Image (cartoon, rainbow, N blue to C red; front, side):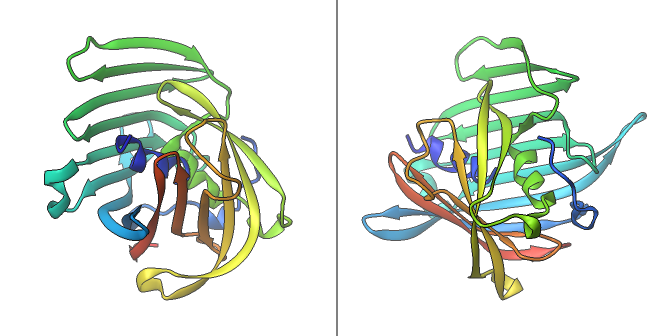
Amino acid sequence: MKKTLFSLALILIFCSFKIDNNTVIPSGENLIFVGSYNMSGLMTQLAQVTLSTEMVKTSKNSYLHLNCELATYAKWDKFFRIRDSYESYVDPITLKPSLYKRSIEEGGWTKKEKYVFKSNSVTSTSKRKNTPEEIRTFTVGSSTLDVVSLMYKLRTLDIAKMKTGESKSFVAVFDEKQIPVTIKLIGNETVSAGNLGSKNCYKLSIGAKTDVLRGKDKNLIYLTADAKKVPVLMKFSIPVGTGQLTLTSASGI
């Protein structure tokens, strides 16, 4: 069950909406979070989560590389070692993904995935420890995202024009399935944002059609209420407990 803990944060951590041209995600951005889990009533810091962006050029195209790295702190490795990475290569303006890769190492359990997006189809290649490689192709909508590009896509929404209680809908690919995701504006709240200081933030509730997210308005993401919409806090509630990701350092924003 623990292996789902930080993976699910990405879903929090996760259409045809108007893009605010002032919020295009910059290359060279680096966000560092502390990942905490509620253990016996105490929110215990277990891991570091790093989100970074960079431009990547090929002979034909330029992509924005969105990268997420998750690693338990050394003192916890002997109990349950996690080394996960999630990567998405997207159009720099629309954030439409072309390639999504996921590499999981959690307590000895491993899985590698690659998703290639072409028009309205995705070809996935997955390999679990001690199992044969699996390849499958499935149809997706033109606006379907992966969980990493979804998280960044939220930052392009014109949230200032949304009313409290208003919702927006997305679809994200995760574990070789399409998952409908709903984002609802709860309101505004002042949140500590690491080296950015205290920030007025949009408080958004995340709902997904999966039985692993629990509670109404218990899965939340806080984005700074400015043009950059930096994620500074994410809270999640799953069957085995609750946890959060808290921003400690932001650079290149």
